[in-house]
Amino acid sequence: MNLPQSDMPLFERLRFVLVETSHPGNIGAAARAMKTMGFTELVLVNPRFADALGHEEAIAFASGAQDVLENARIVGSIEEALQGCNFAAALTARLREYSPPILTPRVLSVQLAADFGLHAALLFGNERYGLPNEAVEKCNVLINIPANVEYASLNLAQAIQVLAYECRMAVVGEAAPRETGIGFQGEAANLAQIDGMYAHLEQALVAIDFLDPKHPKKLMPRLKRLFSRAQLETEEVNILRGIANQILSRMKK
Image: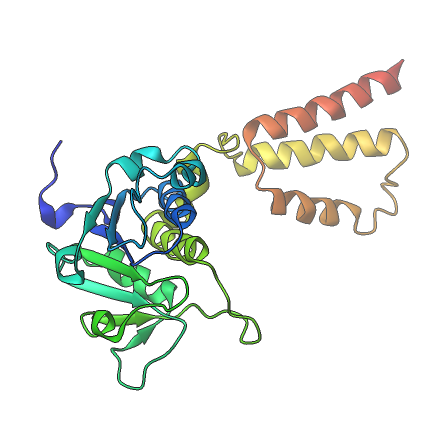
């Protein structure tokens, strides 16, 4: 289904622009950082070496994100890189005396995700010199990563990873673990199932003399607090009840 432009998700509205990049490995690492967070549009402005997208080091550092490299564009100016965008943000560790407003990556990403009318570009400068002033002047905001003031040195790919991560989280939020498919996500146990499990477990603990029903103290409330932090799933409750049932069965023999 083709979405109208006003409904395009941020993954299709955000462009990563690398200006005068010096090292081919950084371009490959940038592509990898983007792809791991679901972004694909990469534009290079005057990279400082030939065959920037096909360089063996760029391909090696992309590590599976070669499709991002293959679909990337090389342009000759900032103006060309920003064509089709109505918002631009410049990443800089060096704050300028006269500059656009300064935002953190998190604040910026929330703004970009919320406003479907924004077709944005994130500009990253040369590894040594950063962005030239004329590039910064074309941007609506500056992005400053609040790093350790005693050692605020991020390489290019690390900076891109931070921005891509924050933008992804602004879109998917707490749904991220389930959306990625990493880890098992079962059905959450309901209160009746959990209460039944506690009662069953209490019987088993009494049967093995671990719990004295005349002097229970706070054992069961502490166990309830422990399990509540685990956000038990139905299958996990069934496992615990199975353990309790096996204990009770053995004690009857």
